[in-house]
Amino acid sequence: MPLRAIQEGKTINAYNLNQKKWEELKESRKKSKLQMPCCKNSAIPKTSKLGTQFFAHGRRGECTPTSESKEHLLAKTIIARICQIEGWDVTTEYSGETPNKEKWIADVYAKKGKVQIVFEVQWSSQTIEITRKRQERYKALGIRSAWLAKKKKREYFNEIEEYQLPYFHIEYNEKENNFNVPRYKVTLQAFIQGMLNKKLRWFPEKGMNVESGLITIDVNCWRCKRDIQVIVGIEVKSKVNKFKKFYYFDEVSDTIISMITPSLQQKHKIGIIKKRYSKTMQHQYLSNGCYYCDAIYGNFFLKEEILELLVVDSILYPIKIEVHKLGKEIPLPNQVWHFEK
Ligand SMILES: [Zn+2]
Ligand SMILES: [Zn+2]
Image (cartoon, rainbow, N blue to C red):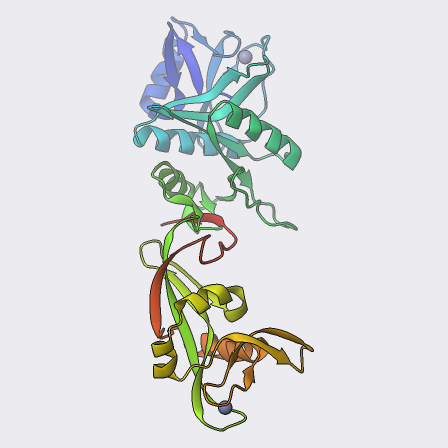
C-alpha cells in the first residue's frame, strides 16, 4: 500500500504530513482529486493501527495492489523519512523496468548524485531464490539494495552472510512502536542512517593494512631443561578498523619465517623453524624447535598453550611487529557485514 499519492500533478508523501496537514488533505480531496500513482484511481488517506499514514485504493485499478501488513507500512515510513533527512531523493513504491521489460517495484528508492539504493522490507516470507532473483535485477541496473526481513520467533537458519546480498533481520518493538536490528542492537533508524553514511562495511577489507605481531611463549625445554621461547602465532591488529585476530603458527608459518632474523632468534632464544619429524604425527612438518637442543615443539602443544593464554589474558606482547596486507601475507578471514555504531 503506497505512502505516495498524486494531487494536481504533485507528489504527496504521507510520511511528510503531520496530523493537521493529513486532516487538511482529507478535506481537500473533495475539491481536488487525490490519485494513486500506480493506476491513477482515487486514493484514500488512511491511518494504520500502528499510526502510519498511507493511501488506499478507492476503487481497484488496473494495477495489482499488494496488501501490506501494518508493520511493513511502518518500516517503509521510517526508512523513507531517514533517507530524506540524510538528503537523499526518496520515492516509495518506486516502479521500474528491466531492459527485458520486466516490471519491478521497490519499497523505498533513494538517490543521491549517481548513487541509487533500494530498501526492501520483507514482512511476509519470501524464498531465498526469489530474494536472490530480485537482488540480481537491481544489481544489473546498478542499484544497490538492502533487505530488511522479519525475524521469526523460531529461526533455524542464520542470516544470510553474503556480499552480494545484504540481508538483515528486523524485529518489531510494540512498546516503542519501532523496529530494532537485533544483530547490531540498534534501531532501524540508526541502522539506515549508518548504512547511508558508510558505517556498514564488508569486513575486514581485502588489502587492508594490518599490524602483525609475532607472539612467543616462554617454555622450559622438555629435553634440555633450559629456558627458551617458541613462536605460537601472529596477532593481527588494525587500530583504525578495530580489527583483531589471532592466527596460529601453522596458518601463517611462511609469514613467521619471513619475520624472523638471526639476531631476533638469539635475543629471545628461539630455535630454527624447519621441518622436523613428529613421532605423534608420524610425518615431517614445519615446526618450532629448542634453541639449544633442537627438540621439536609440535603444533598441538602450541595451540593448547596459546588457548590458555588467550582465555586468561587477552593482551599479548609481540616480540616484533610488521605491517602486512590482509589477503596477502596474512590470510583473509571470513568476511562479514560489520556495522560501526
Ligand atoms: Zn493502483
Ligand atoms: Zn632443549
